[in-house]
Length: 359
Image (cartoon, rainbow, N blue to C red; front, side, top):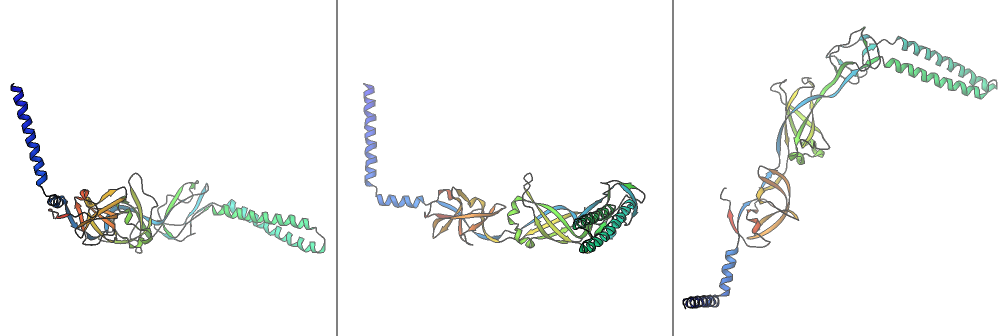
């Protein structure tokens, strides 16, 4: 009996609740409900105006200086040295004789080849006169002509052998210290000295991947580079970027850059250490906080607030720096950009703008 009473009370309560809900739905104004829903559904977003900022950047590196032209001079043949014709730090011209090796045998071979050449030429002249009179057949003239050509080759070979005993400067420059003395026999591969052309020095340094996009190979003169060295304290040298490597170092993710430093006073030497400061000229681009940038299958984009409504604008990222992104696209200075809350937006939806409380 008690259970029946409980079941009856529960049924009465359920019926009363259902009746109350139906009455509420009937008395509620649908238009008023819609208006409240629309007003309450307007998403709040944190916004910030887009600002034009420069993509210019500075970069510091440590580099080693080298001569514009540098070569090590070696012996070619195994022979005794008869003359050493230079001193350390002496300026030399291209082709200037630096070391002479004993070439007496080669000189004799040259004289013999020259005598044979003269005799063969004389014989050929006589045969040419005789062939016109029919005294000598043409085949004999052709044979002597071949001998003359061989004699010329023998002279060239003798002169080449002599040149191998003469070590000459490969270009205009300054020679270094040598350990070679007259009377010493040196073999092929023995280092005689070094030659450096120091009128222009160059430095190679590495720049990180993040700023490689700012280096334009067609406008390298716009890249300002200054260099200093402890060897010349208080002096700042102006350098010019002359080459960018064709690929990045895959291990360090850096690009090698070469800059030339004029050295008219001959103050700089190969092997000096340099502190390099590079200023890359950039361009003015709209910049926004990095969190404002969004991505989907179509690419990167930002939300702009135009006439109080959300407007999607596809953009391309030109650079990233200190939490901000530089954009290329239809974003103008001062336009309102959604920084937070963009995930709830759709094209054309009305929004409630809230300024960033941290600003």
